[in-house]
Amino acid sequence: MFADLFRLRLRRPPADYDRAFIAEVNVRSRVPRNPRVEKLILLCWGLIALKHVAVIWAVHHYAVPFHQLWINAPTFLLGLLATLAYYLRE
Image (cartoon, rainbow, N blue to C red; front, side, top):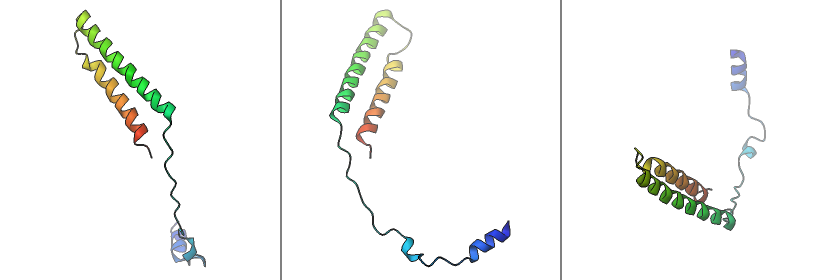
């Protein structure tokens, strides 16, 4: 086991060792945003807003024993997370 370690450590670098490093870096431009996806995101935010209104109405109309933010806050945060993931992607 240790013999292999010593053999690896004492090995000389190959002849093309200096040429093995990176010669250049190519940077690609960002992929343009898809208008269909942006329309879908806008539609989803509209549905989220509609859901918020429906939940607020239902909580007040039926007098349920919890606050509407227990339902609306996670929906808003997940929508925000998905929107940010799309707009801040690399």
